Image 1 (cartoon, rainbow, N blue to C red):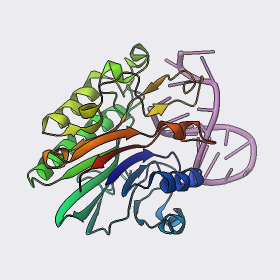
Image 2 (image 1 turned 120 degrees about the vertical axis):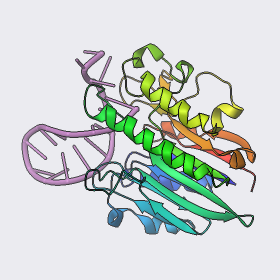
Image 3 (image 1 turned 90 degrees about the vertical axis):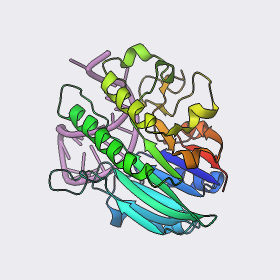
Image 4 (image 1 turned 120 degrees about the horizontal axis):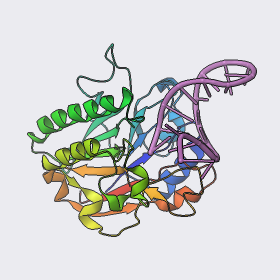
Length: 263
DNA sequence: ATGGCTAAGGCACTTAGA
């Protein structure tokens, strides 16, 4: 089965692209980020018409995540414990769905990790704190010893080779040592980053800035990742970046990435 | 190039993204 992640940069502005991609790619589960819409305004009927169950965690103007699934949801959890929908933090960045695959549970998360720029603002410690919370949550989930896949826009460039021009990002929150160290800590809990587990090529990106002809120059970065628990990673058959959507009319600045999971 | 597009809110611009 196909499990995908895509930061669509506005679900209303991108509805046509989203529906076209869903029909073409036929993901069984699709994790979306940056809906930029409250739940009531998310065009769920159009998505449901393509055969998807739709669970969203929206927010006005910014952030917002969703999981679309051809399988029924056994359980849905919104927000990372300690963050999201608390008085001090109303950012919608995390939703977890639980499914049954071959009479075993499969947990899938759609997450939108904070950008963290500018690094001299409160946004950078907010990003690092969010990553610390994610690590705590992930450690607990791994104790279940179940298939678990954390899909999303991590806003982290893991290695220099994951940027076309790494030198341009050295002072950026996406590439700062503190961000990269936390990403490695997450992996070191026992997760497999799906793309690098099967693909050793350079020049592989999931985001190209709208400015400066980045797409035409392949001046991109790889920041959308699929992290798999050991029980899930053993079922990994392959990973594909759906790069062609970046050349569509009115594209998102991110493209979908998906993995083939042996159900 | 601390920003050269883009989306959203809402109607002139600002905030945010990465």
